[in-house]
Structures are given as structure tokens and as C-alpha cells.
Image 1 (cartoon, one colour):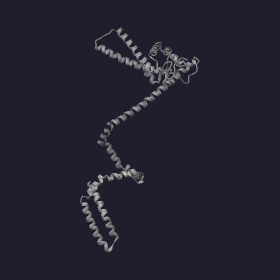
Image 2 (image 1 turned 135 degrees about the vertical axis):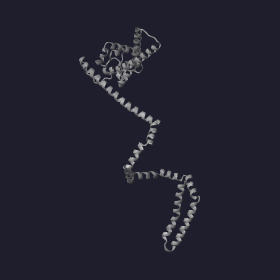
Image 3 (image 1 turned 135 degrees about the horizontal axis):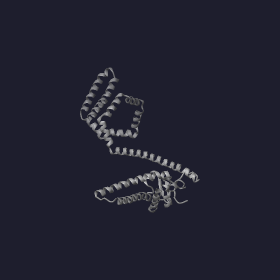
Image 4 (image 1 turned 90 degrees about the vertical axis):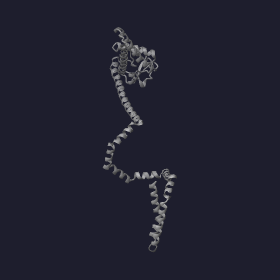
Length: 330
């Protein structure tokens, strides 16, 4: 308020004495003395006015009535402020000043000192700890990992599907069948890759379960015979296999391994196989594996790449984008 009052006082003095100076400069000679007297009287009167409460009342009135605020608002609405800023920013002088300041060694020194300042490190730490910043960083990391994982999965799927065609091409020539250009059904390489993933997953879960059961028996000081332990382990293994494969086929139409390699099991109508069909398919798969995987060899020559489990359960394994293709017999 004191600075504003002083500025108003100086401006009022100049405003009051300006006409007197103009009169004194316009007239000469004889009227010079009268002009000086008039000027001194006006200045004395201005000093008396400014020494009183008039400047404070005027400044308070300007603040209370928001004169400056209305002036700035009018400039914004009329676009005058934008034009002023645009002219300043686009001027060559402003560009030259900014370029000179940016190239100044002092700016480099100030930036270096600011970066090395403990307060700058504290400010950066506070910014990083903000919940919205952490959430943005987590989302960026998740997006990057998702892109990388998707790329790896696409390469795996593409590689196994190319291997599907390479494995069956010579076998189809042996049985005098034309080479297959494209197929909606999954080939042998894709099936084996998915089966390996599923077998590792189910055996890991089975080992964790047996470890927990053994720990409980040890705590209970129970020591079953080897025959009973073997029977329980076999029954548990069969239960884990049935729950894993039949459960995923009957509910989701695909196991986690099949989902990784983009495959799905479908019934004769192209839908998800039920529990009965899934259990039958699991039994056929166990038989096919028991005979040194010979039950999967028909995939190499069959037109719809069916294996023994598919023949007995009337199912088919198709690539996921083409999962709506029916598996009905030809």
C-alpha cells in the first residue's frame, strides 16, 4: 500500500505541475516570473493535497472497486492482452534476448547449482512420491512390459505355427496328400509346446501340494507305508491332472499353455466342450502319451490335424482367431 501511495503521489505531482511547465515554456520574457510563481503555488498546493489522506483514499478506492482487475479483464476479453503477448513473443528482440540468455555461461552455472542443490533433490523426491506420479510411472512400466510380452508371445506363436507346417509337409507327401497352405487347426509343434507348459505347471502345483501334505503328516507324527504313500501319490497326481486339463477345457476351452500359443479346444459345433467330453478327451490323451506319443502322429496327416484324444472325444484344436470353426467330421 505504501508503494502504491508513493507512486500515486509522484504521478499526481507530475500531472499538476505539467501544465505549469508548459505555460512557462510557451511564454517568455516578461511572463517568466509569473509562471515561476504560479508553478511554485501549484506545487505547494499539490504537496498539501498529497500530504493528506487523499492518496490513501484514492488507492483504497482503486483496490475496493477492483479497477485494475476490471481493466485486465477487459483487455483479456477484447484480446488486447493476447495481442500484446503475441507481439512480444514473436518479436525479433525477444528471440534475441532469449537466445543470448540461454547461451550465457551464467545460466549453465545456475542450472548446475540448482541441480546439485539439496533442495532440488528434496523437491524431486517429493514430486516422485506423489500418488499421481507413482501411478503414472506404474502404468508406463506395465504398458512397456505388456508390449514386450506381447511381442515375445507373437514370436513364439509365429515360430510354432511355421514349425507346424514344416513338420507335416514331408509326411503328407509320404501318404500322397497335397501340402497344406493354411489351416485353422493347430499343428503338432504348437500342441507339444502348449503341452510342455501345462505339464510343468501342473507338476509344480502337484509338488507343492505333496510337500504341504508331507509337512502335515510329519507334524502329526504319521508315517504311512511306502505302498500307501505311492497309492496316495498316484491318486493325487491323477486328480491334479484331471482337475487341471479337464477343468480348463470344460470352463475356458483352453489351458494356460494353449492360451499362450493361441489355441482352443472346440466341440463339434465350435463351442466349449463340457465336462463329459473333456474327461473323455483327457483319457484319450493319457493313452496317446502312454504309447510314446504315438497317438499324436495322426496330426501330421489328418486334414483337420486331429490326434487320438480328438477322435475319441470328437473335438478339435484350432488356432484362437479361428476358434469358431466347427470340429464336425468331414
